[in-house]
Image (cartoon, rainbow, N blue to C red; front, side, top):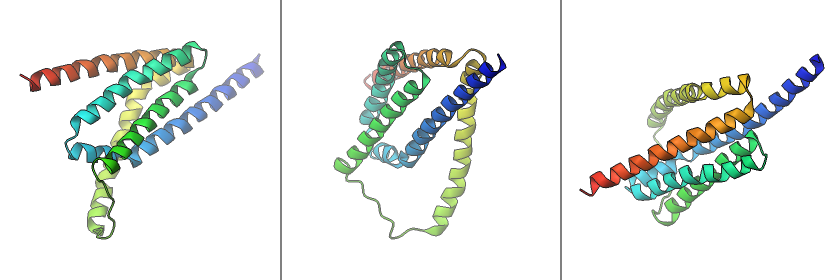
Length: 179
């Protein structure tokens, strides 16, 4: 009986390590490419960004739900989320280069400014980690107490909630700017 519990723990550990690797890739890729979404916002292309955000909010649960209903579990959910995120980021990169003429220039790099940016960014990075932990505690507890399937269902419900909030915010912003 005890060996079954150990095997179950080992399977959960392997699954958790796979999930962490995929989510770490997602986080690293997102952090490294935020310069492109910042450039789009700096060039005041808000509609393009909002359309991409709404697309992400709609397409992620629309793909995730059938995948879960087909019997795939939490790893597939994270893969779908990461794939949609990578597609959005690639769209941002293409938009920046083709439509905005974005170019990197490292010739006149001010080292003092870079050091100050790194210090500031380290505090922002720590805040991101703490925020991510804070928003993931409920999923962690749910996963430890009930299982990964319940976390997947709970996450889809959270996605649906975010879609509702995004839609109401977009409608509110549109109606207030056109009055």
